[in-house]
Image (cartoon, rainbow, N blue to C red; front, side, top):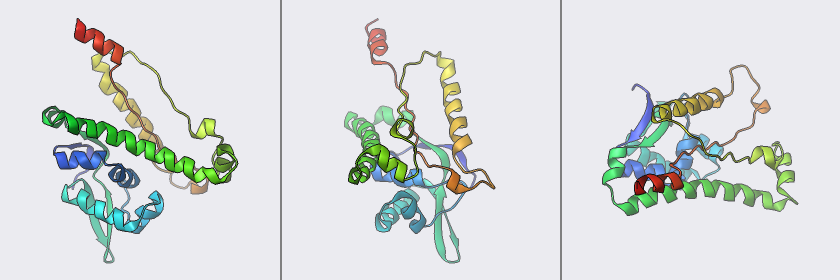
Length: 204
């Protein structure tokens, strides 16, 4: 099966999986070039194998991931590096479903930060916990980049391409390098219309 550059959700069931916090955890743990067992996904994500197995079946039912067997053991990988929603689908589903999509994504990100900070509570401070885990101080490990940019409509795809190139550059450890020299980070990139400008344009 040929790998797609971007898997676009075309059904409400697929959209629900992309906005379910646990579904996002499973999908973000999976790789595109390496097949993983449920146990390997569990180890990488820190989640229970039984629940992971349930979600794997849901993703398979919706044809959102790939599976193969090696020595009688099922292994899974992502269909694509990037997953997104169909604009046509979002335009016809009820408002409350669109609310669910937004809050599902926000809840997934919030949950990751909550779990991280909860794990660090047993230490005197976050910097000490990060240091013991091999990460730099919180300013570097928990940096948040926010800002406003001004771009032309025809440049939107260029921005997406720049982000994709950045993700591709750092999405795996270079061959021959020592994995112990690398730290794993989760990177989330969101872009939305500026509220003030959005309102201004509507009023005009």
